[in-house]
Length: 187
Image 1: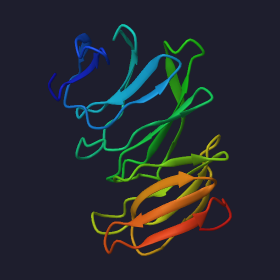
Image 2 (image 1 turned 180 degrees about the vertical axis):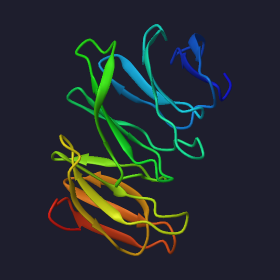
Image 3 (image 1 turned 180 degrees about the horizontal axis):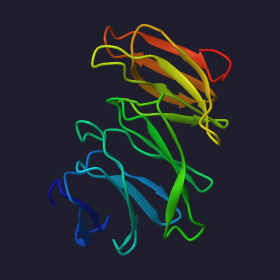
Image 4 (image 1 turned 120 degrees about the vertical axis):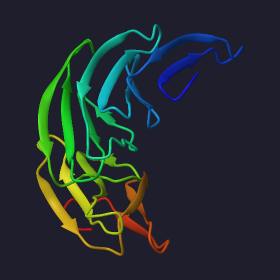
């Protein structure tokens, strides 16, 4: 395996099952749903592969200024959201029922998460956007429409995880941690 491929190995033996070569280095952990794998490469594509065979089901152009895609896509109910920072924004794709095709749902200019991932919680996307390499704001958007609910300053951009309806936000500049209720009205 090299950084230009997505590979499946047997969990018991470690033997290679399949290896799919992308057009550039793969940049984040893949997301999974219904036997499909979603991943991106450094050259700016979002790929969808059949998890059992490694067969390419579709690829969709997704490129930003520096060709870095550090965030894992989020998938729910036939919709797939991906974002990558550097003023590229985010893209919501509608995945066909059988997973073999995709079309654009909506694009946004607000939640361009540099790194630190995004969270889907109760129909809203939460994360930090990229103003520049030193700054960013915390954002909440409606999953279905991309409507911005808030964009607010707290310390600095950073990482986010979720548990039991709460958001755990980590400021990447000074290391502050916030426990935030998942509320689309305010941070």
